[in-house]
Image 1 (tube, rainbow, N blue to C red):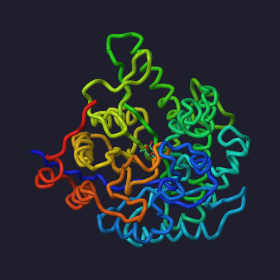
Image 2: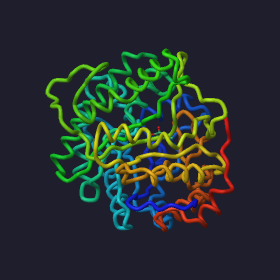
Image 3: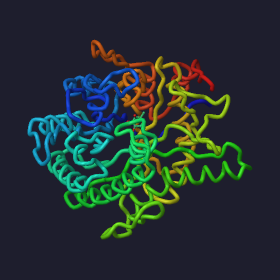
Length: 423
Ligand code: FCB
């Protein structure tokens, strides 16, 4: 039997503002990419021009039967200078969430998806003195303005990825190589998450608030090697476990400091999980094991890892799990349907309370340092003409939604012909 049902799993797609909206703005990404940061020299100014195509994109969501849409707000757009909100930009986002609701689609809104406004970068960003006040002001405004249509919020997307890519590995802005700074950014993100959680609930008592945690399945390259084992435990702890604990419970262990005035209690209503790959660690870093299935960016495709991370997360933080991102870079859409199938099959076979699955991404989009080259969408984007074409994987996704699972026919049509590439 190749078919399976997905009772109780709501399927949707995920996006982020900087990656799809387009426009000449002053954000950390527009500055960095404008100075040639992205590998292909592109900037987010073009992206999917979603800002001007909201109506068309909502129609496309409807055509595919998608009922859940994760979207971001471009902070620099709604607050172009400190404390000065732009009524037109806010009206635009109000219009978008209203249109989604009118179309029967539930929005899940991310406030910070790696996208600091330039004025906040100039004030030191996540390491500066203004971040907490600024984030509070932004959060309050968004909940007040969008709360009529939105009651599901993610204050911060993938805080660990933002902190490590920008401040430890130096491959994203601001290109720092400092463990101390990366830890300080994570500390600030955790404190900001907790404050935002409380503020949103004060304004909207029934809101659902959680983080979208980027979680990787960690394993030692050799299970019997003590060095590999230690590297794995350390990586797992510092990259994801310590931070998630601080954010979800207010308990700040190593490497963090205990902040003043933060009570130990629950600061999540759902656990968001962004899952893409596994990290196999030896003494000298992260490798993809030989002969593994890999995507077009070389990331290992490891479907059981989705459940492995959800299991530990559920033991530590019981409650509903939303897969807030899962997807793959497949530039020719030649294995994405198989990827979808394999990951959803893991969910179908598990007993965990996984309630949502948001595929990353809806359309192809501007993929940070990879620029326009890496394609993650179930809808193809022609950057020149901005035309959208539903990929086979998009048709397959729509079929899964319509049938509440994968039928035998769908398997034969979309999954069976596909193979992964191996490393
Ligand atoms: C995640 C990000 C998302 C997108 C995918 C491919 O780490 O949250 O914006 O870039 O990876």
